[in-house]
Length: 322
Image (cartoon, rainbow, N blue to C red; front, top):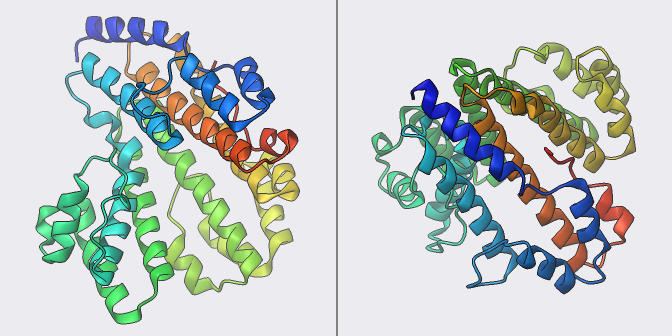
């Protein structure tokens, strides 16, 4: 894409950034007296398309608005595919389980991926793995074979989730833009830490960790696996000696606080892209910012519909990009 076109695209993104949710607006949502009032605040702000006011529809519409905007500004969307890989691999797991159980439902798939879920299902059902991108072919076969032979859906999840992280990391490492590389590194590192913590709490063995953890530059997986097999305190000690040491305080509070910390880490890392007008960086940052606010709105709505205390919801709310 020509530099002048990046300048135009970034200028458009700058105007869209003005409509991103702010911390003060989130306080308004949190202060809503009911789930319905919270939802109405979002509708009044222009969320959704007016055809269906269910939360899932509204959030799906907002996600589609983001991708439609980016597609309208750039000729090649492939640099941003890495942000959708997690959806592809979710759909791969869903398709494998659907073939195994003869489940014909379509609502088990996430629509916003780089591959049509129907094509993934067809590849699994027919065992025609060549229909899939090369990065998914071997794992699709391994996943189906594993489920057929072990009937262990959790093992399938572990295998495919690791493959998703590997794909994200490979795409990030190959990316020319540093923000996409950073996304790959932070996504894999924080996912590895969360898996290791859960493994420590549930007494998983080294074999599980070998299957579940994905390589990245900022973590020593051998030491992380050792710590996970020793227990929670050993995990905290290990993280204290990494660049992610500030996450330990949150981890000792709760797992949800630690997950919030991981998401906030990414948002803080991409904020400097506001000052870079000549690359795709601000566009990538905008996509991630929108995903972050959609996730946060989902958390708030879920908390409201389940009548959780405001403080309980607030401790799960992510930081905003603006």
